[in-house]
Image (cartoon, rainbow, N blue to C red; front, top):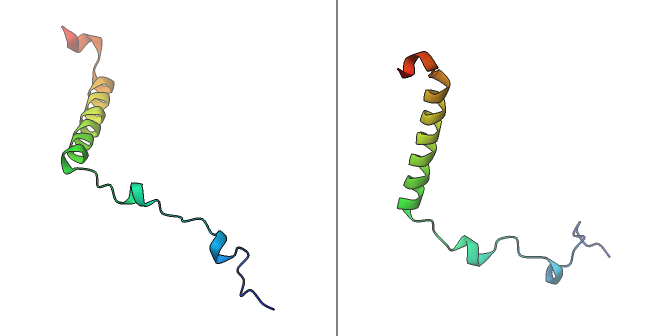
Length: 57
């Protein structure tokens, strides 16, 4: 009797996608807020690296 390469029976398989998480959509304003924050963070770090004490005064 062959099991066609299946090591786990169909009734014992764990569902891979979680419906509670898969059905939740992230609102667009949250995505935009994160994108804006990441862009600001990169700009802040780059400007900080380019800054030097003689430019402060």
